[in-house]
Image (cartoon, rainbow, N blue to C red; front, top):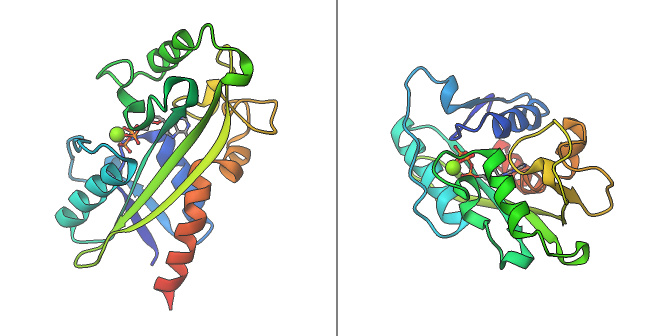
Length: 199
Ligand SMILES: O=c1nc[nH]c2c1ncn2[C@H]1C[C@H](O)[C@@H](COP(=O)(O)OP(=O)(O)OP(=O)(O)O)O1
Ligand SMILES: [Mg+2]
């Protein structure tokens, strides 16, 4: 395999996948890299697995090639797991990272540091024509900061500090985030699957 299509329109995610797959000499393409333009696939599922499968299977069926999709989000314990699968649209349909972070910080206003525990979760689904969908899950534990810090990454990175780190995900260099992230942990499982396929 020398190329893979990622069913995503998220430029931040795609950049991370391009870096991961470059290590295996595989070129990753996002939906916006393709000549044909696709509408957003509606994420009607209630779990990361359902939404990842929806995105991967829809595109694999359409293109008739293997497709990888990522559904991910932030689970905050003090908010009973919210925003969870609804992370992208937490503050509304506009999918604004800034508005989403503002909403989370507002909701956690009176929550003390030790109760601000959270995790990033990533589920990857690979769909291939006429094969069962393969899933890989990863997560990283951390806490929600009092205020956003850092310019790297995307989404909720400026307000998430992984356990054992003084910097937020947005203050870490991209290559540092890519060693510890939920997406990396899921990729490690996918790597095993990629090896199986290569035999
Ligand atoms: O590493 C991350 N660092 C910070 N934030 C993150 C990360 N990973 C996911 N997130 C947040 C962003 C978005 O609010 C939601 C994903 O939503 P999700 O539907 O999976 O992605 P999306 O709609 O942005 O792009 P697409 O569905 O086209 O892949 O979780
Ligand atoms: Mg989405």
